[in-house]
Length: 484
Image (cartoon, rainbow, N blue to C red; front, side, top):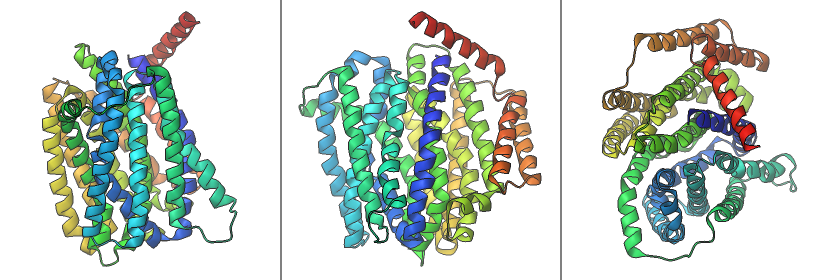
């Protein structure tokens, strides 16, 4: 199981490293450079707003499905058609709630127009995630890896053509970006379900109220957890736009810092997406999950710690590579968000284990506290400090929530934390910090050199184990010979 996790992780990382950085920095950042921080700030606020309530489209069904496909595959496949019909009903609920609150907030016709496409986009995203949850539960990581990058690959092709090979002399409009996203998500849905139905067969579409109510009751704890986490992760940009005197511009500054935070979040989600069905299966079978948890902790937290330090020290250089405008205004929010990402990574890792264990009451309680911390700090900090205040609130919130989750996991699962692993993390962090303090990565080659040295440091400080990698590669080779 550990070999399957690491080989699946390697494939997902390779595909995502090839595709998503181009989509994020070559497409998304290019759009912001062309339309400006104010116009992009409107889009970014609406995008974050659409995320706040998208749990109404899912209600935790994808998480529930992924867990139960891993544990009870035949039963989970049998209710595919019923869930698809239920999702259409949930789309209506999501749209009603989103547009009603948008009108209450006082957004105008243009904002509502953009939001209508974003509502459809969120529906497509949840359908893709639902299809991926089946492949994830079946441990079909190659198929899931392909689907995880398909929409971004299409965005590179279609939107890249408009950005770099324009067919019109008219300046690029933010609504064009939204339209192309709708097209890419829609095509990805068609491909995802074509692959899924080849595996499961064509389901009978039907709406069963008793089934829907029962499924929602079982999924509600998952839905509540996702909603609470989404609020304290995504509410910042909405509050900036609403609370600050120059809200649209400040939201644009925040977006420039948040873009890389969001990109790193996607890569951390690769870990959790692979770990969730594995943890679920091992917990139900009462197998020892601790070796996988230890490997994931060293890889994820070690890697994010190194990235956070490198990006913190070289924030100006990184932002100047990506953006043309407002770099100074985005500098502090970017640095704070990078430091906050270490807490976010720990939050995702230990939250995934607790979710697989069914500890949802605890997770929901902690997430509710996280919301209180985040919103309280935002209300106090945003009017005076704008994007920087929101980024600081994110840093404190993510750190607090992850610390509580770690302590709970240690006691609940009787995890042994010895002094040596702690010293390894401290030593590695100090190594990267000193490296970045004395070596300014003001060129791409120096940046790659610092990153490479940090990667080597993970081996030196035992965060990546040579013997473990060798045994995994050997077992993979034996498996391929057997299959051949």
